[in-house]
Length: 67
Image 1 (tube, one colour):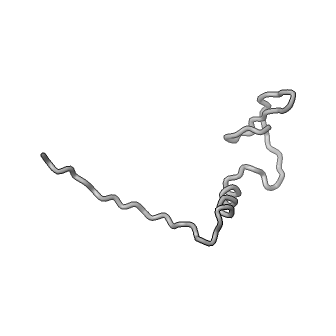
Image 2 (spheres, helix red, strand yellow):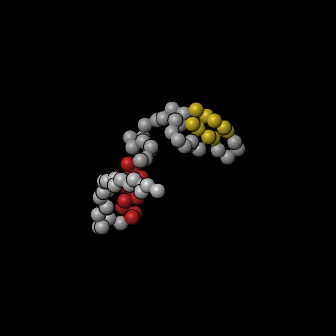
Image 3 (cartoon, rainbow, N blue to C red):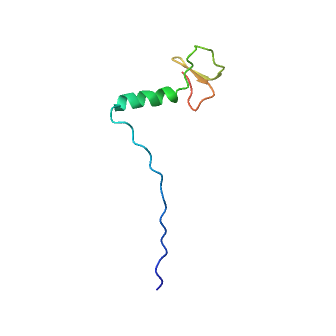
């Protein structure tokens, strides 16, 4: 039986986060960089999806809806 052919692939190393940052700081930085909130308090266009006794659902064009 023939020997199977194997090849080595090089995987680039990802630098680890610096040890002086806490998980909370890293999470906060991530949330700020991935936030869809408007910093300048501008208005957004939205489509009303549903109205209930307790809430109104809006489609604001993001992956989530607003209430």
